[in-house]
Image (cartoon, rainbow, N blue to C red; front, side, top):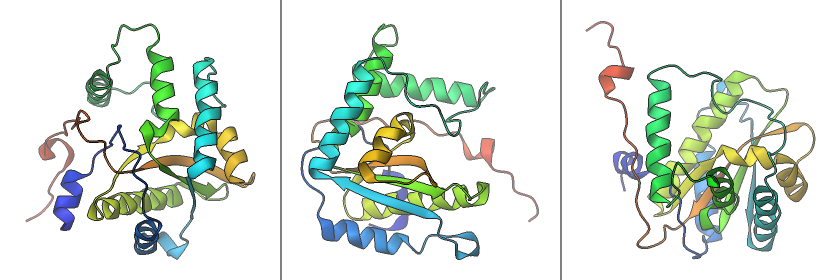
Length: 221
Protein backbone atom coordinates (compact mmCIF):
# COMPACT_ATOMS: atom_id res chain seq x y z
CA UNK A 1 0.00 0.00 0.00
CA UNK A 2 1.55 3.31 -1.03
CA UNK A 3 1.18 6.49 1.02
CA UNK A 4 -1.62 7.91 -1.15
CA UNK A 5 -3.69 4.76 -0.70
CA UNK A 6 -3.04 4.78 3.05
CA UNK A 7 -4.22 8.39 3.33
CA UNK A 8 -7.28 7.78 1.17
CA UNK A 9 -8.33 4.61 3.00
CA UNK A 10 -7.76 5.93 6.52
CA UNK A 11 -11.03 6.71 8.26
CA UNK A 12 -12.40 6.54 11.77
CA UNK A 13 -13.75 2.99 11.96
CA UNK A 14 -16.49 2.45 14.55
CA UNK A 15 -16.99 -1.30 14.29
CA UNK A 16 -14.04 -3.57 15.05
CA UNK A 17 -13.80 -7.34 15.06
CA UNK A 18 -12.49 -9.33 18.04
CA UNK A 19 -9.48 -10.45 16.00
CA UNK A 20 -6.38 -9.56 18.04
CA UNK A 21 -3.74 -7.17 16.78
CA UNK A 22 -0.41 -9.04 16.45
CA UNK A 23 2.11 -7.62 18.91
CA UNK A 24 4.92 -7.73 16.37
CA UNK A 25 2.87 -5.68 13.89
CA UNK A 26 2.08 -3.02 16.44
CA UNK A 27 5.70 -2.90 17.58
CA UNK A 28 6.79 -2.39 13.98
CA UNK A 29 4.27 0.44 13.51
CA UNK A 30 5.26 2.25 16.70
CA UNK A 31 8.96 1.93 15.97
CA UNK A 32 8.51 3.39 12.49
CA UNK A 33 6.22 6.17 13.80
CA UNK A 34 9.02 7.42 16.04
CA UNK A 35 10.38 9.10 12.89
CA UNK A 36 7.40 11.50 12.89
CA UNK A 37 8.31 15.23 12.85
CA UNK A 38 9.14 16.71 16.24
CA UNK A 39 10.25 20.30 16.81
CA UNK A 40 13.65 20.27 18.49
CA UNK A 41 13.44 16.46 18.49
CA UNK A 42 11.60 16.59 21.85
CA UNK A 43 9.42 13.60 20.89
CA UNK A 44 6.91 14.71 23.56
CA UNK A 45 4.43 11.86 23.23
CA UNK A 46 4.02 9.22 25.93
CA UNK A 47 1.99 6.22 24.76
CA UNK A 48 0.33 3.46 26.77
CA UNK A 49 -0.83 0.39 24.82
CA UNK A 50 -3.77 -1.31 26.53
CA UNK A 51 -5.31 -4.65 25.52
CA UNK A 52 -6.56 -7.92 27.01
CA UNK A 53 -8.00 -7.94 30.52
CA UNK A 54 -6.76 -4.43 31.43
CA UNK A 55 -8.67 -3.02 28.45
CA UNK A 56 -11.74 -5.10 29.30
CA UNK A 57 -11.66 -3.69 32.84
CA UNK A 58 -11.24 -0.15 31.55
CA UNK A 59 -14.21 -0.62 29.23
CA UNK A 60 -16.31 -1.95 32.11
CA UNK A 61 -15.50 0.96 34.39
CA UNK A 62 -15.90 3.68 31.78
CA UNK A 63 -19.10 2.19 30.36
CA UNK A 64 -20.60 1.98 33.85
CA UNK A 65 -19.90 5.69 34.25
CA UNK A 66 -21.45 6.47 30.86
CA UNK A 67 -24.62 4.42 31.46
CA UNK A 68 -25.04 6.06 34.87
CA UNK A 69 -25.19 9.44 33.17
CA UNK A 70 -21.85 10.54 34.60
CA UNK A 71 -20.96 13.83 32.81
CA UNK A 72 -17.29 12.94 33.02
CA UNK A 73 -14.21 14.50 34.54
CA UNK A 74 -13.56 18.22 34.19
CA UNK A 75 -11.93 19.02 30.87
CA UNK A 76 -8.24 19.84 30.78
CA UNK A 77 -8.53 21.29 27.29
CA UNK A 78 -11.53 22.12 25.06
CA UNK A 79 -12.49 19.50 22.49
CA UNK A 80 -14.05 22.07 20.16
CA UNK A 81 -14.40 25.88 20.00
CA UNK A 82 -17.17 27.15 22.28
CA UNK A 83 -19.10 28.75 19.42
CA UNK A 84 -17.80 27.55 16.04
CA UNK A 85 -18.92 29.70 13.13
CA UNK A 86 -19.61 28.66 9.55
CA UNK A 87 -18.29 26.69 7.79
CA UNK A 88 -16.94 24.73 10.79
CA UNK A 89 -20.27 24.30 12.57
CA UNK A 90 -21.89 23.11 9.33
CA UNK A 91 -19.19 20.53 8.71
CA UNK A 92 -19.43 19.28 12.29
CA UNK A 93 -23.23 18.92 12.21
CA UNK A 94 -23.25 17.10 8.87
CA UNK A 95 -20.54 14.65 9.94
CA UNK A 96 -22.18 13.91 13.31
CA UNK A 97 -25.57 13.23 11.73
CA UNK A 98 -24.05 10.89 9.15
CA UNK A 99 -21.86 9.09 11.65
CA UNK A 100 -24.43 8.26 14.28
CA UNK A 101 -27.22 7.51 11.82
CA UNK A 102 -24.96 4.74 10.50
CA UNK A 103 -24.72 3.42 14.07
CA UNK A 104 -28.52 3.39 14.40
CA UNK A 105 -28.74 6.32 16.82
CA UNK A 106 -31.37 8.84 15.78
CA UNK A 107 -30.88 12.53 16.48
CA UNK A 108 -34.26 12.75 18.26
CA UNK A 109 -33.53 9.83 20.59
CA UNK A 110 -33.57 11.18 24.17
CA UNK A 111 -30.99 8.54 25.12
CA UNK A 112 -28.70 9.60 22.30
CA UNK A 113 -25.90 11.09 24.49
CA UNK A 114 -25.79 8.02 26.74
CA UNK A 115 -25.81 5.61 23.78
CA UNK A 116 -23.02 7.53 22.06
CA UNK A 117 -20.93 7.59 25.23
CA UNK A 118 -21.43 3.85 25.80
CA UNK A 119 -20.34 3.00 22.24
CA UNK A 120 -17.24 5.13 22.71
CA UNK A 121 -16.32 3.62 26.07
CA UNK A 122 -16.41 0.20 24.43
CA UNK A 123 -13.90 1.57 21.91
CA UNK A 124 -16.34 0.32 19.25
CA UNK A 125 -15.24 -3.24 20.00
CA UNK A 126 -11.54 -2.63 19.34
CA UNK A 127 -9.21 -5.16 21.01
CA UNK A 128 -6.53 -2.56 21.63
CA UNK A 129 -6.39 1.14 22.51
CA UNK A 130 -3.39 3.47 22.46
CA UNK A 131 -3.49 6.32 24.97
CA UNK A 132 -1.36 9.31 24.06
CA UNK A 133 -0.20 11.66 26.83
CA UNK A 134 2.00 14.75 27.00
CA UNK A 135 3.93 16.24 29.87
CA UNK A 136 2.10 19.26 31.31
CA UNK A 137 5.19 21.38 30.71
CA UNK A 138 4.70 21.06 26.95
CA UNK A 139 3.14 23.83 24.88
CA UNK A 140 1.07 24.14 21.67
CA UNK A 141 4.04 23.23 19.49
CA UNK A 142 4.43 19.87 21.20
CA UNK A 143 0.68 19.21 20.97
CA UNK A 144 1.06 19.73 17.22
CA UNK A 145 3.98 17.27 17.26
CA UNK A 146 1.77 14.69 18.99
CA UNK A 147 -0.89 15.14 16.32
CA UNK A 148 1.65 14.50 13.57
CA UNK A 149 2.89 11.45 15.46
CA UNK A 150 -0.62 10.01 15.79
CA UNK A 151 -1.36 10.61 12.11
CA UNK A 152 1.84 8.76 11.26
CA UNK A 153 0.74 5.86 13.49
CA UNK A 154 -2.68 5.69 11.85
CA UNK A 155 -1.25 5.69 8.32
CA UNK A 156 1.22 2.94 9.21
CA UNK A 157 -1.65 0.93 10.68
CA UNK A 158 -3.39 1.15 7.29
CA UNK A 159 -0.22 -0.08 5.60
CA UNK A 160 -0.49 -3.14 7.86
CA UNK A 161 -4.17 -3.72 6.97
CA UNK A 162 -5.42 -2.34 10.29
CA UNK A 163 -7.87 0.45 11.05
CA UNK A 164 -8.16 2.99 13.85
CA UNK A 165 -10.45 5.53 15.45
CA UNK A 166 -9.02 8.51 17.36
CA UNK A 167 -11.15 9.14 20.47
CA UNK A 168 -10.83 12.41 22.37
CA UNK A 169 -13.85 11.09 24.31
CA UNK A 170 -11.49 9.23 26.65
CA UNK A 171 -10.52 12.58 28.19
CA UNK A 172 -14.01 12.62 29.74
CA UNK A 173 -13.01 9.55 31.75
CA UNK A 174 -9.35 10.47 32.13
CA UNK A 175 -9.21 9.70 35.85
CA UNK A 176 -10.36 6.14 35.16
CA UNK A 177 -7.80 5.79 32.35
CA UNK A 178 -5.02 7.33 34.42
CA UNK A 179 -5.56 4.92 37.30
CA UNK A 180 -5.55 1.89 35.06
CA UNK A 181 -2.45 2.77 33.02
CA UNK A 182 -0.59 4.35 35.94
CA UNK A 183 -0.14 7.78 34.35
CA UNK A 184 1.22 10.30 36.84
CA UNK A 185 -0.02 13.80 37.57
CA UNK A 186 2.58 15.34 35.28
CA UNK A 187 0.90 13.83 32.24
CA UNK A 188 -2.21 15.10 30.45
CA UNK A 189 -4.26 12.75 28.26
CA UNK A 190 -4.53 13.95 24.67
CA UNK A 191 -6.70 11.12 23.34
CA UNK A 192 -7.11 7.40 22.87
CA UNK A 193 -6.84 5.61 19.53
CA UNK A 194 -8.87 2.43 19.05
CA UNK A 195 -6.97 -0.08 16.89
CA UNK A 196 -8.02 -3.30 15.21
CA UNK A 197 -9.43 -5.04 12.16
CA UNK A 198 -12.70 -3.75 10.79
CA UNK A 199 -15.74 -5.93 11.41
CA UNK A 200 -16.96 -7.53 8.21
CA UNK A 201 -20.27 -6.19 6.95
CA UNK A 202 -20.21 -3.11 9.20
CA UNK A 203 -21.65 0.08 7.67
CA UNK A 204 -18.86 2.16 6.18
CA UNK A 205 -19.11 5.89 6.78
CA UNK A 206 -16.90 8.20 4.77
CA UNK A 207 -17.46 11.80 5.76
CA UNK A 208 -17.04 14.47 3.13
CA UNK A 209 -14.16 16.89 2.90
CA UNK A 210 -14.14 20.53 1.87
CA UNK A 211 -12.94 21.31 -1.63
CA UNK A 212 -9.25 22.12 -1.71
CA UNK A 213 -10.14 25.59 -2.99
CA UNK A 214 -11.88 26.26 0.36
CA UNK A 215 -8.84 25.46 2.48
CA UNK A 216 -5.76 26.10 0.32
CA UNK A 217 -4.41 29.31 -1.24
CA UNK A 218 -1.52 29.31 -3.69
CA UNK A 219 0.69 32.38 -3.43
CA UNK A 220 3.19 32.82 -6.26
CA UNK A 221 3.85 30.75 -9.36
